[in-house]
Length: 265
Image 1 (cartoon, rainbow, N blue to C red):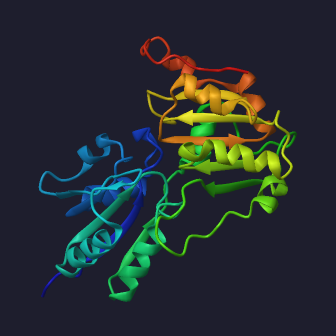
Image 2: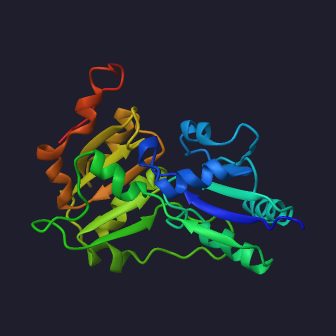
């Protein structure tokens, strides 16, 4: 009897390979096919079987190795062949990771699937930068926003008047290319130009850098510091806690002399 295939939508975590969950590790070890993204730490692939089939489908901004529609088809096709398929995605599969869309496609074609959550970069990258996204004295609410719009039809516009003042802490994913617009909109709809903001580049990895500034000045500072994607954007008073709580980049300083912290108040 032919084995029944299944798709596991696995969150690989934010970059530090030790932040992979035990359940995610077990799925990788059992996988017969792994379909993985650009932001997945390559070290995680070492946990897979030597017979595993690897399919790379990394995405750069406006550059997709494999279109999303084709990725969906690959998952279903491999599962229908009786394979145990791991869709390995950076961070968490359902936090701006299109995991929901891939699960919908599996359901449409009656393919079994399972979500295995991962630690999302919107929480972990700020944490590694010494910025807790909530704190009793600074923030009782946090909102996660995608800073990258869909290129096709159906894109949902950000409700800037509601968003700007609707939460104490704002965390933007994939927003670096739109940093100027984000700052402009937040100031226009009520945030003070002096509001603290942090950019965390390559969060939780050995190449993490953090840039701290204000809404009115961060765009110029980011350009001068040559901050690049992937980067998480954090807006709110919690950013000020970095002065007390920064820990990770200090640990890395001795071993990575060419990646200095950029912390411009």
